[in-house]
Image 1 (cartoon, rainbow over the protein chains, first blue to last red):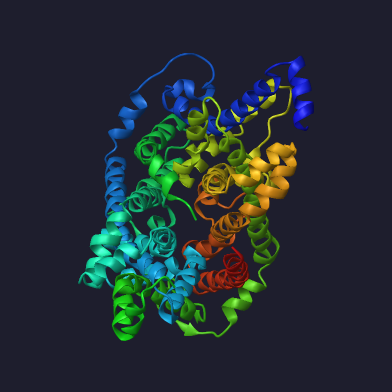
Image 2: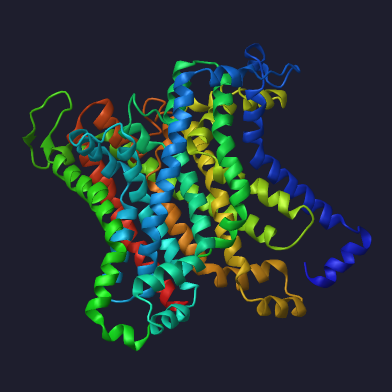
Length: 277
Length: 300
């Protein structure tokens, strides 16, 4: 439809195009939100109402009470939060310098490092986490915080160095050069000039890193056992243990969504601003 | 490139600085990725059962056993590639459409953006549990709606292709926002002038998209597809929590196959061989992708 035709149609039915646009978009938004809405609705239904979630109006908070009374689940929530937070701090510390190096320097070391990062990122997780289980068993790292944290950091290095490089590419290096001429050391130029200007990027990566670690499943499944229960793993075990108690299942899932949701809500603007390839 | 000449003259010192910058990252990667990959590589040549401490060298026997396993050839491999292709294609198309829509201002834009980006924060495991409940054969809402519309309730998760489609659907739901986010960022950084010129000429929306937006956005699209394809190849959580590879191991992807052989059937040698075969497959694909990426980087 060209502009002329469009004006012609609009003169007959003013706003018809806008209404159909709004309608289509609303349907799409509804379809995207529906699974989460359905989960939330299920989590507030009593045991008896859960099989006919769409019928009746009994709502209850007791599902959440039951979930929070379960020691293992609460333990798992705390562990997941600890692992996600510590992994984020260390991932950022390690990747900022690595991304800076990729962005500011050329030559065999830089391109070699880029190649290594790319190659290791393509390696499927199973390929290195299966044998990692034996390495960790041997050195007493299995089922400890460190044993779970370090692989998380390893994964983040590969992805975030790449993103961090992109951010530093967008920052003009002339400030750092000026600092060097004024007698600043390389480390001074990096830490006092480059890093402060990368704060928005660091914020964006922190949000992503926390979400990735909070949502991670495979590492926790293989590398943890009884001592460090992790929420994603405990949840999948519950599907079989709880049998058909979908109301409890839903309440657990909703509780696991809350921190991620709050973080996304507050961090959204950094991520959208920071995520440019 | 933009570096001062002074910097380049002090080459030795600069190289030392470069190495110091990446030293912590290199240490973590060696200990937690390179060493395990090496051990896994070695294990794939051993007869290593987890209940038996004796490990004997068997050469390529594990590889032969994986590559002649009909389950691997007829189910796991096709599943993995069909899954990768379907998931990436559908989320790219839907994500692109949403990015184009969200790129112009309209009322309620912020709300729509928040809703459409919602799945980004949901753990694949949670998404899988959610979908499993929705597609429950007795009480799931999907069957309820289907019956209300006069259809027949389906046992979605116990038939191979319907279970497989549900898995793909879940993955598309999870990752479409990721495409939308990155493509939207790409759209917003495009120059305005060509679009203004097209608007003055009265070009149709489709032609603007086909001949302006798409070619200009190509580098971003390719980066997104490459990253996503590599990740889709190794998908584990969604399938594990949704069907566990069932019914009768018919929706297994390669990661699940390797994990099951190692930790369920306790044949660590065969599991490692499967894991290495998968890594080699994706490495070849990755090299092809790398070439494409490199070409795009040089053109843009």
